[in-house]
Amino acid sequence: MATRQVLLGATSVLAVLLLLASATAFSIALDAPANGANISKITPINLTLSGGEAFFANYSIDSGATNTSLVSPWDITGTWVLGNLNIIIYTGNATANYQNNYQFVVVNSAPVITNVTPTANTGYAGIANLYATISDADGSSDIVDAKFYVSNATASIWTLLGSITAQTNSVFTYDWNISAFAEGTYKIKVIANDSNSLPEEISVGNLTVNNNNQNPLVTITSLNSGESIDSSAEVTWTATDADGEDLNGKINLYYSANAGDSWTLITGNQTNDGAYTWSTTALAEDNDYLINITVTDGFDGYASDVTDDTFTVAHSGSSGSDSGSTGEVSAGSPTLPAANTFDISQTYPSITAGTATELSINDEELALKKLTFTTVIEAINARVQIRDLSELPTSISVFPPDVYQLFEVETTNLNGLSIATFEFEVPKSWLTENNAAKEDIIIKHYTTGWTNLPTTFVSESGDNYKYTATTPSFSVFAIALKQDVGGIAETTQLETSGATALSGAAAGTLSLGNLNLPDISALPGGWFTLVGIIIAITLASLFIAGRQGLISLPSLDVSEHINRFKTKQKNARHAPVRKMQFNAPKIKWLELELPNVGLGKKEKKLEFGKNSWDKYKE
Image (cartoon, rainbow, N blue to C red; front, side, top):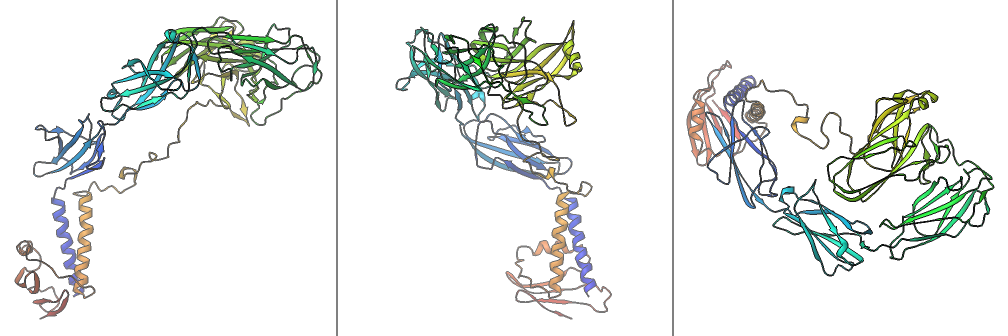
């Protein structure tokens, strides 16, 4: 009997599989956003559609009469109108079709202002270049304009300067002619308008207007009497500005060992606190030295003072030490040729965003021959200054080895640098002296440490080799030789940031496409057939277990399905139901006539009682 029941279950499974294989199932799933969600004007509608090998798909927006074709990857994009958005998705083939309706609420996304200049206390004379970075989830084209306002430092009354509609990479700029404004301190405010909302942002720092600038004053108050100092000295000064401008970060200290013919930077951009402790252990003993302190005020105002008399150093020493496997040593140890001081300087009345700007250099003392740079922000009255260095600033503690030349690039009123390219030359004789090949040259860039810039050999030019290198920012640079660290050649590291991609799959993405699932494309109906097989096996197992009395089957409500049940039974292997008596909606009993399956007897009747199979009747 058990064998006969197993055969009966298998027959049922086969029948279900045949039905699934012949059916075409269509599926429409909304991946994102959720149905009924609030969305922006440009939010894409992401769908997943399936339906066999050949099926069509299209959609209608807001009950439009014309259906628009929809193709893989089944995404619908557009600029939606504020309010309710109704989308109907259709899919099917020549014999069947299917549709789903989705509704969203389109809402306005307000612009976001992330930056307004000035971001710190800044002084201007003549023209002030203002800019604001503005984004909008509805797209940058949704921003109508950016209005720039000015107020006194208390931000009590705002005056409109101008309205800007043009932008470059989400940056709006305004050139403020401050010649008509009284000298004083101001704030800037920007309001972004997208026709539906007006967010605003006020600049963090103050802007100082100084149309009639007076130069600052600086006086050195120590080392003026020809004294002799030991391993360190306290350099003191006073620095003031008649306009009341902030001089913090604008104090630079230099020394000279040749009566002022050339100057070496001790430290730059110092706070105006009037004192600096200078380590002199690297200086030669019994030489005559001078100190020079300079100060700028942000309006091209400049002041300088030199010690009244020379002084000497009675204690000499080296502050350099071997730094380990990198081969680099402390700043100040190597001796380089005497340096010039900002003899390369160029001012640009206007720099157009996105346009390459060139600075040609004809100074024989500098290896650098040309600087080309591009900004994403328009610049007004920008200045670029280049100088070679004989020593590193004291803020840089590690000196790269095998340096040909150090140089520094500083800028004023130049923001939003995109990329810059150096063109430079190195004498062939220097490479020969250092047993190096032309491919061994590289430019190192100092930010928080030394980083190798992408450097390319270009050609030979007389007694020199020509190179190019690119940098994303300006500071101190070193033209040097590549190093072997621990037997491994030094490689160029691009100055970029970002997470490392996961191996084998996109980071942060999980989908069926990332899973190693079996290929069932050869199975008729694909995944629908496989799911049908699982369901059929489960139902057959329940049926056989019930016949064996292993489980209790629930009572069946079949009043709505008798005709369908009889129809399906006509072509079944076993005999159809001959009689069915029921006390609706519960079956009281039913009688089956089954064919002889080789068990020597014929089962005729099966009684169904209170929610369970009670017994078999002959």
